[in-house]
Image 1 (cartoon, rainbow, N blue to C red):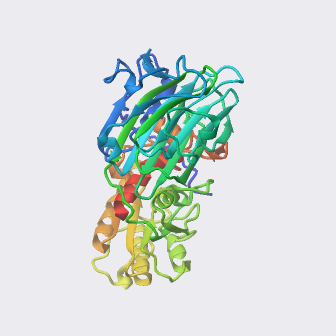
Image 2: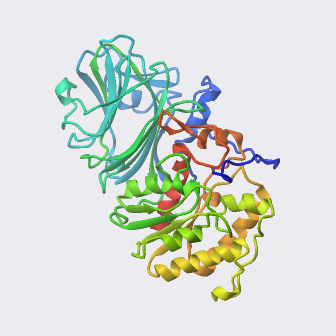
Image 3: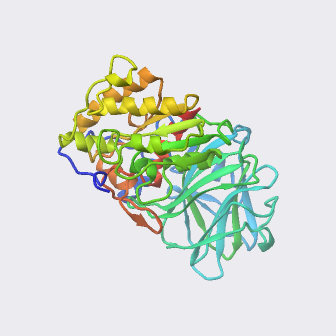
Length: 456
């Protein structure tokens, strides 16, 4: 791609403070991973649990009756427990009654010998599995399906169906889960807990669990102690609650919508989460403005069958092209006559693109995604594009999924650039340390709730 690899500018970045949920002795390399607990200020309607284990909890030891202790700023579980035994923390009614939840926590195992396997399981009030994570000396394991269990014990016959990954057991890992009990879906992201985090697993799966009732510490065999930190459970501000299931979405735009070098972008994550049918037309290097890979061409080449939703972005490559004097931002036309649109400008091309969408699919809800604050583009050019885009969207009745304005993602902040954007893949997933343009899986976490809110 020619224009979206990004170019650093000399603008001054406002350094944003990141709230830390870590004990004072934590190393600085862990800070970026902690941000994943709450990607946007608007993402959580209510915080149900936010435990850093910096002091003893109430109830003691996070509610685990045995094998648990809060020590040195973390919660240790499966301590001194025998083979195939469990210790269960029951969540209260406020948690059990929620249909949609976001959960993040940090996890580490101290297994040291080949005869050890310890893990944690999330189960519903009937014993159905929601999610499980475990470690041996050589494998990180996770599971989303398996036998029903009352969690009184953890024999091999009641183990989850494990997916196994080679890992470094000396590291901490961060787990992010989106739990939807209306659709019985879990979206998961497991990554190393460090600034240049490596994604171990990411996906969306159907589960049998119908609520979140138990956190089970399982000592499957051996004597490995597990540690848990920064346990944060929240209720999303805007949950689709099944309203988007089966709906169709067409997605147009540049590499941020396409996914850059990865098959799944934020529109894929949103569609997977909500069981929507997605057709993605976006391509790397596309722009709203004239010439080259114009997004208007994507719209004209799309199927005529009407979708329920049309989602598109733009402006990322336009910012580079406008900064290099390829064309101007331009101004919004006075009316709706296409003959008055100055298609040699960004503004005229945007109105032409929206008019084409409206003409082809008059009943579809159109959503424009205003991408995050980019450290890879000239700031004043971004502001000029944003100003005319918001006015044009208001004129045409286009909803705005405003990641720029409603999230904290700002890759002018070098910490955000490193933690949340990527250029290439690592371990088969988007890496870190990008130019500030392309959100990696953690960066997409800022986009998905904002898009969901605009769709609903």
